[in-house]
Image (cartoon, rainbow, N blue to C red; front, side, top):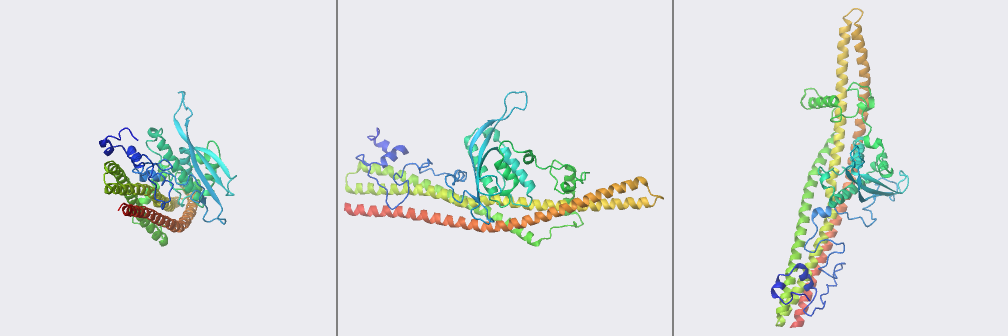
Length: 514
């Protein structure tokens, strides 16, 4: 059978591949080890062979991280792959997004030097029956920078909504871009991100997402650059709508300084701001969301512990099966009495069961991660909730800053008017300044009103989003627990059948031998 078969020491220290081969044959070289018919699994015909999908060996189940980054729904069109609208009047409305075919491309040279840096693009395929989209099937190629632009634009346009966080840009991307595993990891992350956007009842039909998914070639400048802020009242300009938007760090330092000063005044100043957060229901929900996030973090950590324990159990079962394979071979070669042959048969049955149990633990681990990955998804949801609440706090700070600015400007105008009234005939220079101040006050008042409306709109967005997340969380967690319990019970039954079959065959063989 094998070249080293006559060497006793080689049988005791043979490689795993050799022992697998030995285990599948008896002393006469014929295959006589049939799997217990009670177990129904595609891999039962050869308990030591690799799984059909080319996975790791039976003593090397996939790690937690490997399974997290492996898509479970690439090959089917089940409801898991379709983003359906929970609020749609028709439950048949869907949008499916897949990201595939990573392709390295050359950056156009921006100087007289030849060549340029390389980057990776991904083929994004969308299939939908939503009437808001022009057509039902379309594909585009996008690079990661386009996804960053999409995320930034959505964050700017949909304040107060819980927008799923986009994948982070790796700080060492230029060093690892050549690695295939990094590209695949990013592909999976991008697909997950886009599907989450498509599942959002508002974002799914946004102009930004429709342009990203449908417009071929380079993205329009309106999506890449955003609206921008041309001028602001607080910076000396008179744009009413744009000044009502919160300041952006590093772009408008003067405005940022004013809002920072207002924030410090709110925290440490003696005067109470003219507008404060008084929605008690929101404050209670915000605190509950904070508590929920802590519980989800704890549950996620425990899920990782469970997966690691199941992985260790699978590895241990695999090693046990391999040990009994060696022991079975030794007993068969040294057997003189029937009792030795009986022991060899018992160990053969035990080795079969241990190998199958190892495979079941590997499959159980993959399914466990698939179900409990909902916890990790909701860690991302909690980040989105924090972002929505931050939009609300930022909008409130803008309102407070503009109210304070109006009060300050009115105070200056009153002082100038008082000083001018003391001069017979009026002070022309002061009168001119007063007129200018009145213009600024009017513009700032208008901006304040716009900011208040934006703040109220963001408050309403927060309210509707929290209610939506409450509904979805109950359904998601219920499905997660159902899937997890059914999965655990199913594999426990499979493994119980394996060991029961071992006991039955062992007892039957012993009765026949005696």
